[in-house]
Amino acid sequence: MTNLERLKLELAHKDYFTDTEFRVFLEENGLDADYTYNKAENQLELLQTVLAIFQALINNIELYMKIQTEFTTVSSAYKNLRDRIDELEKRIAE
Image (cartoon, rainbow, N blue to C red):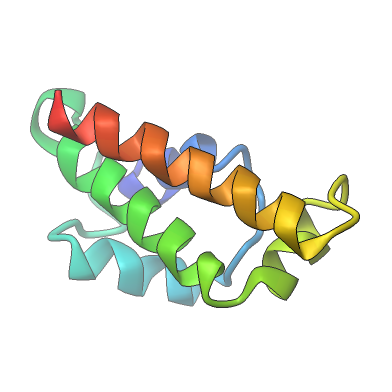
């Protein structure tokens, strides 16, 4: 499994961004999208990539709501995304 495939798995295969954009997020966090994912070596960088993606979505909550259609208000979508960011930050700190 590549780093890009593992990222998509972590995001539950939600197409928040294009593969090209996902590759940029991975590269910004020190990962090559096409390299084989190794949990021992890459988990922290992968989680930081997911965090960066969620932070980008906070700035474009309408995009998040298009993908996560269960939210009827911006505030409920924002709260859900904020909770996911908080959870990720805790995982990264461990």
